[in-house]
Image (cartoon, rainbow over all chains, first blue to last red; front, side, top):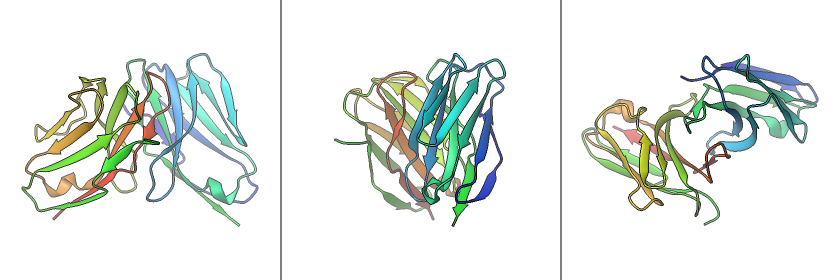
Length: 109
Length: 113
């Protein structure tokens, strides 16, 4: 079962913040976040394991609420380099990694 | 190698031809995944290997699709009698173990004419 991401697309000005949401209909053990730029491979951003932790990576952080089977990715003070498509990947504990349809983020000067 | 390597980078096949796509994972990575990515979509799961064992092939769209990883390292995805709907980017990813980050290759863009 694929996770559902929202929004599908977002346009920001440099310095603005954004939140990308990911939800699943099944119990989750972990959530992964990846960013893919046009014509390139997805690149790992962070992984959140069952336990509701929040992790950070530069000005990008994420939370995981396993009771609600949801995760959110927070991008603060966005930079031009943040542009790309963000995917969440979810695992139920059996190496059953499934990806959402993606959120296309465009950061403009 | 430094990363996951896929070949060929591009493949054009005439409808009905067979194709073979190769993936060289990062050395020592136990898990290997194949995904199909259509334009503007997320990666769709095809199959998963743990070492040489194919533990999940539920995402393979038809019996024309076949994957193997005989020695637990290099993997090959084979598509027989290609159809136009098979046109997509095929991504391979490997990880050290369960619940660790996936490292993706640059993919093979398959175009069926």
